[in-house]
Image 1: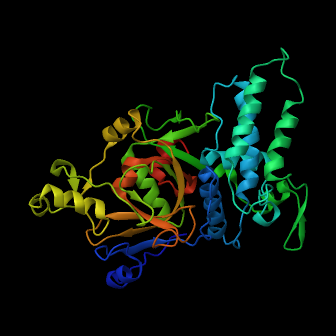
Image 2 (image 1 turned 90 degrees about the horizontal axis):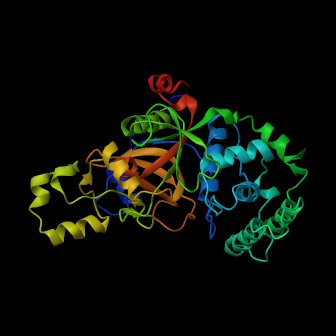
Image 3 (image 1 turned 90 degrees about the vertical axis):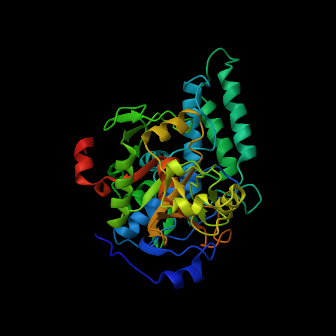
Length: 391
């Protein structure tokens, strides 16, 4: 399916939706998706972003709107992470964090249920918060790893799962959805998604390009492999996907000062004329240093942004300026009055915390530097790149 490129009045759009009056956006692609959710006080953004991505895949395939249960996936991931933690004698990651492939693998193993069948709220409040549970689970795992019985008992996994379920609820063996009875496995099958069609890609010089590599980040607790591309080709994949009706699950770093969810923007400002793009350099450099700094931090209108290549990406990854601290879901593309591309990105922090109803616009320079990995349907990858990857 090819998405028609929709052009609208930039002036009208700015009045209605601009984070500041100085931004004028034109929509390029805006894909149909499901409502924005709120992960509240849990660190399972990977879960919310990837299920939003799969819900949008169902819409792309002509299915109705589904609301899939994030906490059902998270519950099973906590259990699997605990197993891995003990198998590695505590020398691996156990936390609330994760990656997009965790959702795919949990659905393959445990199935999936709709939100109405599993809310994950069992502790007397209508608010998701897992800090106490995770701390207690960590204690159980560390206690077992000390091996006080001189052998790991065969029942520890049963006790570990029961503790998770005390907080999040028992998995439903069967449930009724729109008048039909399902198991989690039969419901997953009814969605008719081929989960093997989804691939993850990254872009770092430390790995060989066009090969599958293990992305060495803490939340890749499953030691999964990603296809590695130069950054120009990774961006080509994102653009090709969106323009052909496929959304993108995005994993990256949002700790940069240019990321402002309240303003609905993620940009990569620079004061250095040698690395500027989309800038009238002479006009910009005539401003005082104080005025340039004030303008860059105001989010009031477009500012010069940084050029980003493979070298800069690898440098910020090596010194931990770029880490995988958040996953979100890209559902569209826009451009501002200077021609800079932005990616319409669905966050999972609720609808009422920024001017775009829970979305933010990430500039192309920001994405070029801050992206750690993406997940897409393999058919969303341009044919020439697919051939290089052997897909």
